[in-house]
Image: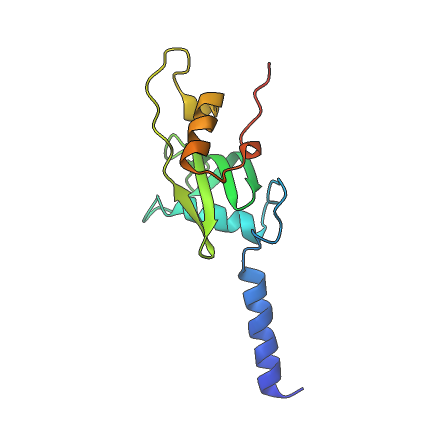
Length: 143
């Protein structure tokens, strides 16, 4: 094999490894620890911690059809929480995961933390704001 062909093959394999195959796997899933998709999701969350080296304790993560719902706790290098953490909604667009704005809801004493609990009221408002958002990425309430 010619050196240029070997170089092209190495470049192709490297780009294939680092691409996030979100659109090729459209079923409901939790990306595996260490997978390129999970790393890309965490990297998009890490952008909120400029200048800090953080890792995340993943409390919940589900992905479906280019949407992700994740609940994480940011940790420092000693494993101590550096912020409160909580849920985030992400969308895969233009080749990258982007954190989306959560819908604002009027206060309701019966539903004081609708986003944190992914309440039915919150999910309905999120689907109204983002029409292709699948409901199955949100945690199922235990009765």
